[in-house]
Image 1: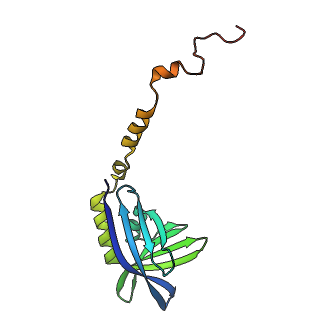
Image 2 (image 1 turned 180 degrees about the vertical axis):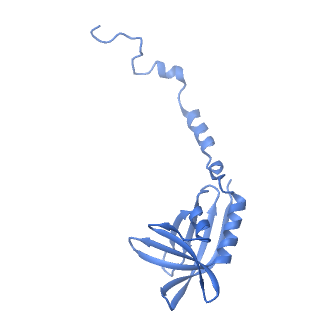
Image 3 (image 1 turned 60 degrees about the horizontal axis):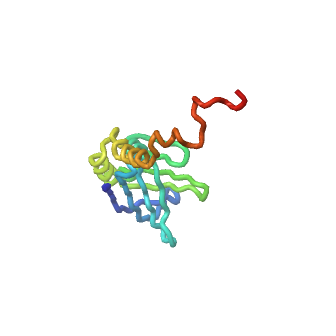
Length: 158
């Protein structure tokens, strides 16, 4: 069983320094994928646009510029409003989005209460997965009678 923390909000897709258009979005955090956040943008097409990146990147980006490559995040202030900017880059194009800092911070706070930083590995289920894998493995005594010669058998031509 896992927990999901979601938040619907309206982002601004920046078209120019003077103009942006609203883009409905959903922020999603799942405890079964504890290192990542998922952002779904509803841009009026047949299917939404999905981005996944490190939760740590967004947490840091609320306070200071961070990231490189495909995802960069930084705080800013525009017309007295505190915003979090996300620059996303893909082979299909680039986008600069602005999100209300208070809404993003409140949502991040909820994710950090569900899975505190440094405890993400506890939610991966690796121990359970390894136990199931080892339960399916043949017993050691069956390996000894397998198709491979044992170390005690004489080599051919000896």
